Image (cartoon, one colour):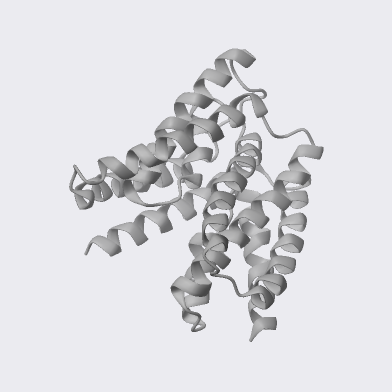
Length: 249
């Protein structure tokens, strides 16, 4: 069973590393389907694999100079600050209403990305280093707030927002992997502190996702066309929106 999971997670890491995502949105349901305990195994394992997929891909993108640290570092810091604030506001606002509106927004973003996948790509990022740092801080605060408010990972928001700012698709996806590493690490360390760890399962699947993301990141850098990358990410957004809407029904 573990060998089958390893092969499956290798393939998933191959795909998600190209999109700037960690993959926990798919890792977790699969682990549940295989009968693993949600609290003791699924959540901490998903967080670890999410972070390792992103970190492994980020290392490749860093060596290819595809990560924009001017925007990603402020984004990491302010998202960590804003997440607890969003979690607090949850007590004051009906969460289901917000989830419904947010699901529609994600659905629209996914459809837009697919429909506009053939649009021309910008050649470089826009704005000075200082301007990108300011935008990174603002985006990070917004993403962290939404993540804390709705109890979801905000990593899938980074790529479409960066693209809306004029980032080339590949640069947006590569930069996203750097941010996802930190959001996953903080969550995993919290579970590690209370002993929610299955080390044998984690070790096998960790090797699988590291290998898969290494291959995926290299394929994205050298061979992947931006149009196909946009279409793939659009499909992922539609899947996320459908999953959120289904949870409200």
